[in-house]
Amino acid sequence: MFKLTQDRNAKGTPLAKVVMQTLNDVMDHDDKVVFLEADLAGASNSRLIEKAHPDRFIQMGIAEANMVGTAAGLSVEGFKPFIHTFGPFASRRVYDQIYLSGAYAHNTVNVYGSDPGFTVAANGGTHTTFEDVALYRAMPTAVICDGADAVQTEWIVREFAKLKGVHYLRANRKDVRNIYEPGSTFELGKGNVVKEGKDVLIITAGQLLADALDAAERLEEEGISAEVVDMFTIKPLDVDLVLSEAKGKKAIVSFENHSIIGGLGSAVAEVLAENTVAVPFRRIGVKDQFGQVGTADWLQKEFGLTADDLIATVKELLK
Amino acid sequence: MDKAELKEVKLLATKIRKDVMEMLRHRGYGHLGGSLSIVELMAVLYGKVLHVDPKNPQMEDRDMVVLSKGHCGPAWYSALAEKGYFEKEKLMTLNDGGTMLPSHPDRTKTPGVDMTTGSLGQGTSSAAGIAYGQRLKGSKRFTYLIVGDGELNEGQCWEAFMFIAAKKLSNCIVFIDNNKRQLDGYTADVLYPFDYAEKMKAFGFNLVQTVKGDDIEAIYEAILKAQNNTDGANCIILDTIKGQGVKFFEELKDNHSVKFSTDELKKAADDAIAELAKEIEEEER
Ligand SMILES: Cc1ncc(C[n+]2csc(CCOP(=O)(O)OP(=O)(O)O)c2C)c(N)n1
Ligand SMILES: [Mg+2]
Image (tube, rainbow over all chains, first blue to last red; front, side):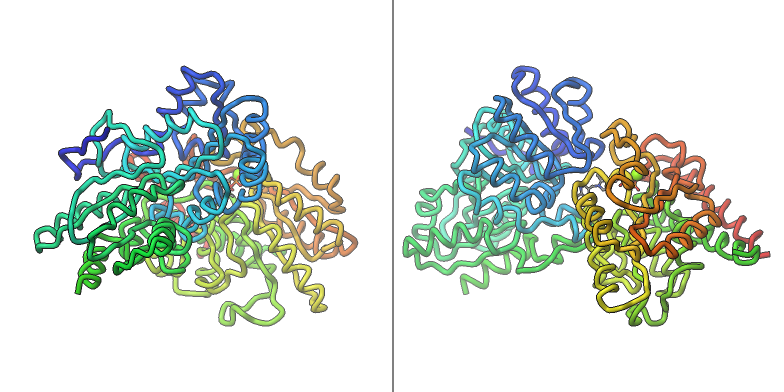
């Protein structure tokens, strides 16, 4: 059960810190959990794990492919590995290792790919991941979550630690706006209707959820009733929820910090098309473009991923 | 290198160092340590070695540079600006939205940048390919590859080195910036590297030289020697200091990526810039 926060403008603990503190706590209670880092402890806060659990903190150096393979080997030995690196190196760079040594071999590897999409900011185009969801979606059995805020991100880490298989968490390293009250719980593979509405259905995930709620409230002021779904588990997709909430809507929009090719919007489109849901539909996301450098705010605007962009698309669809 | 030439290259190095400090101070953060450790190398390359034309960056049959440790772009951009590839004012646009100077080098954005890098390890293979292409075209030009010591953790570097050695790509001159540190601390603590020179020799490099990375004449001599060794692969290990040339930042514990968030750090940067400006004035006299 989840409860929404009273103050959506307040930000929580930085998400990288949330991941590492949670993981550290999990490791306090489960000696099978190990953590692997590829020379980014200084960037991810995992030094706290290194201090508390020096034996199960494994410093791999700048060798992501080797990190994934090593994690798979640890899984063979019955350990539950978590690994961290920046999004592009946690997906593109190690795809064959995570695919074969991980998923195909039925091993457990929990991946935190940090700073997805526009949250890359100063690290720029080479470090931008607009395709990590597409890659992990195409990997049989892989589970993908996009953390909307600190509360949900903590929940996701605790959940991953209980499960076998390949799990991918994409989340900003920095602090993001709060959505949920502490203590909220979720269900893996089940989306949350965080705001009800009659006219339009907005399906989103990750930190864009806050922008989607802003947009929905502003649409409400203009007499457009918008429903917002937090699809924090992008795979497996909550097909039933997509179909039940699509019923009776005049428009459906997906809204994601990712390419429109292969991500949440694609997943939703597949469900709608295969179930003959003939409602005006748009995917808002990155339109087959490479990333670039800039502040996160500037990039969010540049790639058309703001509440304003969402509002404009909704209105256009309802015309 | 005669005295006048040495003076000139030394002056260029001081200017590059000051530019790097100014860029990062202006931006408020950046990859300081590794940018400063290659300042002298950049000054030797751009001041004395490279066959390039700043007015015609795409000149046919030029020497090529690949900065595989791409996060140190600011050092490269400073050298390029000092050589006139673009106006020096552009340096202050580092990481701005729409800039031609992104944190990591981009061959589609910056004149003089021959290859896009930033994902560590990848530049080593690109450099090998460029050098191979030069040889196929019958060119006498060189490819200068700059690799970080932490970057050597990446297996791809060693795949590239095997290839460079096996194919006897003597025109690909490999510089290892041995500044002893990476992001999480000392390379010796992160992943003990053993002996780089022994490793490179074992991988088939037939001329492996180690020089002080702030010694302009020594770097230049080593490059000349490498250029003349056409029997096999060439490696020059630069014994450098992360943060080289600015004492405060050499001694700073976390000097990989510095955020000028405290008054102490801001003052240290400002003092360094003033000090370097004074040096330039004296050297220009
Ligand atoms: C494939 C990849 N993994 C991780 C990073 C993040 N990263 C950037 S710089 C750096 C440390 C580099 O150390 P080193 O090569 O020694 O560079 P220098 O000391 O010269 O700054 C890391 C881990 C990256 N850019 N690419
Ligand atoms: Mg180094």
